Image (tube, rainbow over all chains, first blue to last red; front, side, top):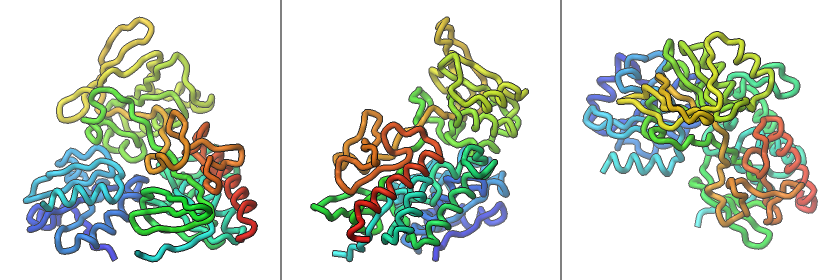
Length: 108
Length: 308
């Protein structure tokens, strides 16, 4: 089972900004086809990187403030946060191997 | 060495071509595996409304392909998630390699589809996700009450433009020729929509802005005059390029990178077929992709008669 956490405007600060490890946040919406392609890959990564990183997902439709704050204008967008700041911005579907490289860079 | 699972047929890609092929090979009682890198359905899952697939006056791309997948699964199709990294051939035996293991097969059907072409102008890459988009269904809601542009003149471009009119304050369709390529009914809808503006014979030279896109630099191809169009977003819909990067040096590709096939949809390598958007001379329709899948499936069935 994946370990992705559903994050909303109430929990964003606690789960993402105050995290001790890097956090990958998947910005998505129900109407977005490619988001559904990204989701299973993120689920797999959340198992493989369990303990090393936190994996969250934000529904931009229900949480427009977070999406607005980070300038999300295209989904799926994956943002990797480190020490409360976004350090990597990945727009659109990417193969798993490519995402792993981005995660490894963030963890290095 | 991890165990290599053996199948009769391995299909690469779970769009309409791959799913239709699967229905045929699974019904032929060939042990069939479909490998999909993301989610089954292919590019058409982004289409809110498909109106040119016979039997459905209107259906979403998502629902249509889910039905296809259920149908194929009902006949025995197995599906795995994985990114195909390459194909190796050793005589009759062919192996499809993925990040999640290798699968051997007597026949392979490549149905890996296509993705949106880039426009190839300054600013496009920089502003991807900051106003440049390739998917109106995904991103239209971010442009509520803002002016946007769509680049392209085909059915996909006009479909995207019409979807955007539900959100944006104004939608300008920019096309490099003096006529749209899209089918007549789509043109009628575009021309009668009060939110739409048409800029024909016009090309985009650059996409500009600060943090986000704020304007396009346009050029009239006849008068060579330049002008600026203020937009918050630009949706690029200028055709497709086949997903064949994993196939280089495995099967011959045409100049556009699409897989060259014969009339049975077989590539130069016996036992390897290609169907749908990924093959040479595709017309990029769900119905033709499905037709290709059926055709490839039938020829695989005939070729594997001895195994089945």
